[in-house]
Image 1 (spheres, rainbow, N blue to C red):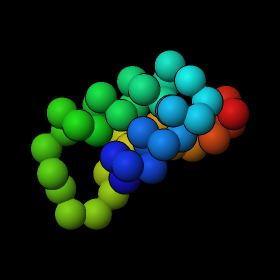
Image 2 (image 1 turned 90 degrees about the vertical axis):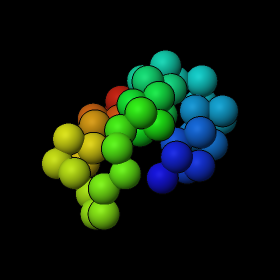
Image 3 (image 1 turned 45 degrees about the vertical axis):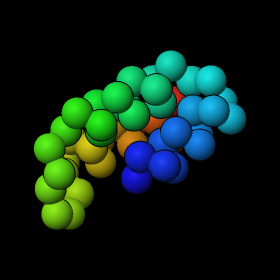
Length: 48
């Protein structure tokens, strides 16, 4: 997930993508998706 987020940021320069990347890096590792992460990704999709 972090690799995808970095690639997206490097191609778009979108600051929200970078902030998501930093949040993912500091978030504890959990198996499966969290609701919070899914909400952020859906917001990111609508902003692009």
